Image: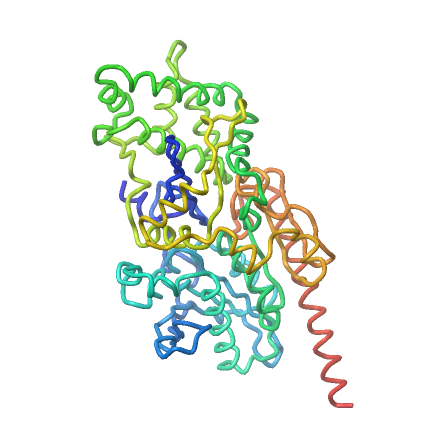
Length: 500
């Protein structure tokens, strides 16, 4: 189970009680937390010697002039110079904007930069998000979250201002003032990339926002959107599996209500510890189903692994045993199963809990549709606010994201003033329910695939990749080529005008 803890990536965990407990809000990430192998590190990627680590003395507060605002911390970033065409050629810079994980857990899996750097002769830059990994202002996540004043510097606006400062620093050091920057991000980082382009268009020429649920705020996207796609994925893959899961919740609750019912469930699911409540088991299963749907990546397609196990159980096997067979097939064969493994506190989860309880409020619930694979449950904003207030002593700001970055009437707003953003989504990704799925203008484009899953387009390219994924990446590359060609055309025209 230690391998599961090493990713700390997005999985949704919802309680089945009426409370919309704040810390069951989703986190976002590139790979599933239930990966069955060790995470990649810099030593496992091609030419690790080409990745140089640096630290920038970052200002704590970009928006205040109090003395403590000038406190600095070391922000980690990595550069790969291998393919860069140089400042004299105005060769581009591809900048990956880190999200809610340590940088060395993120960038070895991000292939879009390294796969395309030779073609563009691009400099590769990877920047760690403040308060994660080694870029922690006060020495540790615990110290950084200990009071309201310190936590107040931990937000997305400060994060993208950090990226602006680092990128300008890099351009200055390399005398690369005329090198165009393309920012790239996935999931929460994809939102940051899109917002960066909107807030700092003078720094970033364009942005790739991969699987960015940028509309899952302030009731723009439907509450049940995420889980309706999970349901759709399962139902389209196997109706019998979908029906087994749908009826299993009542069966689990029935067994739990019997004398010694929790002991019975603990034995039937081979849990490492006695279940304290049936909701612990149900949360665990919801996490697995969400994981499977969101990260149904080729070539393994974990959804097929799960449904084959559930559907393949012996004739007469009840729903509970079929569900357990699916757990074993997906999580691997272990001596026992720790149902709270996804809830264990980590620096990543603690940081994302704060972000969720401050500004990243995404109202996600199961919904009440009778076709849902999950029991009816809606998101209760008032209960969410009370939970956050009781834990942190501050009120969440559920409307701030759309106030600061936009969101309401996004198409009209971006059509009027935005440009050069690719919103990429796989339509089998539950988070696509909060994504931009239609072109907004000639240069704010939606690139979607019917079979795609979460962040798949910016992961490392593999020989086994299906043709639709290959074509999605080619489409994105072609768009970026057009942006850069137009940039160089404008740059040349400007230089000729100055000389004249």
